[in-house]
Amino acid sequence: MAQSRVSRRDVLKTGAAALALPAFLSRNVLGASEKIRVAVIGLGGRAGGVLAESRGIATNMQIVAVADCFAPRIGAFINAHGQGQNWKGYDDFRKMIEEQKPEGVMVETTTHARGWITVLAMQMGCDVYIEKPMCLTIAEGRAMVKAARKYGRITQVGTQQRSIALNNQASDFVKQGGIGKVHTVLVPNFVGAKRWSDKPAAPVPAGAAANFWDIWTNQAVMRPYHPDIHYGWSMWWDYDGGGECFGVTGWGTHSYDQVNRGLGTDETGPVEILLEEPVTVSNTGKFAKARARSEDTGTDYHGMAKAVVGPRAKITMKFASGTALKCHLDGDSGPGLGAIFVGEKGSVEINRNEILGTPAELTKGMERTLPGEGGGTGLHVKNWLEGIESRKRCTADIEYGQRSTTLCYLVNIVRDVGKVGEKLEWDPAAERFTNCEEGNKLLDRERRKGYELPALG
Image (cartoon, rainbow, N blue to C red; front, side, top):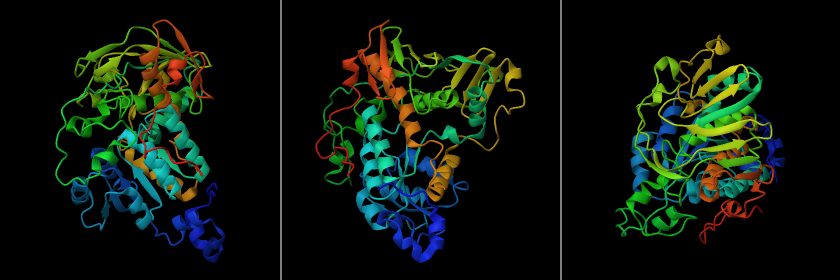
């Protein structure tokens, strides 16, 4: 049954009338406090960052509990981020949801665990904030969208630039014809994930539960414990699509999301993908800064550690409109978190809370950057909370996240099975290749027993 789009606070005011609501909706809203009760699943560095950036902005959120399958993290996380707030810690998120009955959960786990956890949380009555990339495969992402729609859940994928006013202003300018017809969009040539090479097993860290590694491994192939997997999972194909800083599913997720936002392709995708050169493994380390501040929207990010290690090759995708998306940019300049839109009247470079028009007159009257907007995470969480209250879809609804994440995985798939110079045809409605069965085999993966996606009963 789909969840009614009724305001949470309206339900609070209706008193006995709320008894007619479905049980799962009643549990989420009846007797709810003024603040929205939220629990966090996955207590790594990103979870701490999201909470820190939300303080003072997402003021109507009350964290009630946190969960991580790696027990040593729980107490440390509460001490670091929740002192004096009476958070309860769990090593099983299902028990946490059952006991605490939060209205929403933030899924800040490893990529390969997000789909399974998200669907279960939806089935248990929660709205969900999902870290990006939201899924490990295109098919898994589509299953998550179907679950959200079936259960009427409010979702927000962690592509936080959609909550930055300047990004939205510049995107609307491009989408509404400010640079004329867009014929080309340029994004960086992001690296993909590497394949794991077996190493001798290492001891499981002290304090971990006996079943910790089984739960952590989730859908992936079971391998002996190794800290390079546990702490470096975003580098490896089994667990991510290239999630390090300059990876396809790292900064690339934001970049491709900016493409869709600017082109208005939030609910579709390309129709053709071309591998332009042989795949090579980059091991260049961090790129050197290439442009002056006045000519670059990426200056604020040059100082960040960027791993440029993994498979890469230039690719061009084409949309039905004829617009070409070129994954070509090299060097540590330009929109590592965004895109350059090139049209009949010039170009607009959109990065995180930064814009640059060429010629400059194109963006005259727009701020180059907006003070106080920052990275946008706090604003993004606030937008999700507003969605929980209003039951209106968020700025980075799960369908939009699916389409942006699909672009990331199409890059990886075409690099894996494509032939240089051969155009692969993609049906964005069916989310399948029409002339590449090898590629279709990579749209999903076999899941380990016990971690199959739940049936949408």
